[in-house]
Image 1 (cartoon, rainbow, N blue to C red):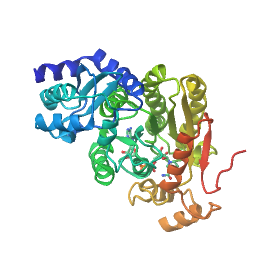
Image 2: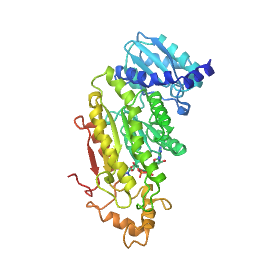
Image 3: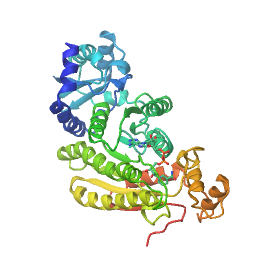
Image 4: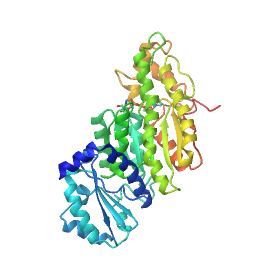
Length: 405
Ligand SMILES: NC(=O)c1ccc[n+]([C@@H]2O[C@H](COP(=O)([O-])OP(=O)(O)OC[C@H]3O[C@@H](n4cnc5c(N)ncnc54)[C@H](O)[C@@H]3O)[C@@H](O)[C@H]2O)c1
């Protein structure tokens, strides 16, 4: 039975696609629930929806009793409880847990008494505290295994969001997600190995997010790469790689992320969602011997404005954040591949003889005198999400280095 169901889900494109829209609708109707139960071993995603139960009533005590009677630990076994009017559906993220989930669901529904407050008792308090600014929001952060993405994911999780860490570096993503779960509770994050420039991979990433947390509220399109070099040095394959990861991937991630966002909006017209591109100050002004990167980022602002126009009617705001140089991050400071080394070798900084010379040159360009930090970017992200009256913007976070004309 378990094997048949697993095969069914893996092979059924249609079923997976319909879940990507169905779950966000159920979550929207139920006022933001679920997104509260996440299987501990969620790397077995995606799995299945197992049943829809008719429910008269639910109480916290009844649920606790049901779990106790079924001899189950809810954190390990149940994944998501959808409550839609007087109907509840139990979602299992792990095929291994299928039988347990059914057992548990039956016990739960049999004992239920129709009180949504029970769900509050199951949200992890350390994640969903009262003052959290992103309480219960589900966010994909691409390229979040390290650098800006990891910092953004951490800041968002600390504000109560459930994070999908999506990265080409699967091991790094897993480590980053585990770290967030240690810090903010077991529902804080899951990891997905994803290549944002590959359409199938992006589709699977969005499906995994929805199956993990029931919907999607925020896409932070952060994954990005740099290949610096002059016209003479730049190879076509490097130019195309930068374009694929920084520009085309933004289109792909947005194309699939809006499916659950639109689905939620279709049943709850008040719901708003956010697409946030981590752009760059190089998207606002040209960058000497770094045109592949700057071109991809300028293009990203064109996409941001165009997506914003198309998606406004669905309550999806689309904004770009344009950070200044993250001089302490691995993109700059990696001793082998970092930009300090690349720029030194490319002769981009006149007279620079060491990596330190290159660093000082870049610090001196910033009116506020330092490199951009992840917390600076995180503040802009919170602003964009909370601001209900702005879309299509490119917001500089550059210490004054780049100012809007
Ligand atoms: N570092 C800066 O100074 C700076 C400044 C402005 C803007 N930005 C932008 O911020 C974003 C993050 O930069 P960073 O400095 O943190 O970079 P980083 O190199 O430290 O991290 C990038 C992450 O993206 C992942 N990644 C790369 N290609 C991928 C792909 N195809 N699919 C999925 N994941 C992929 C990497 O594995 C890595 O974990 C980028 O969009 C970058 O352009 C960076």
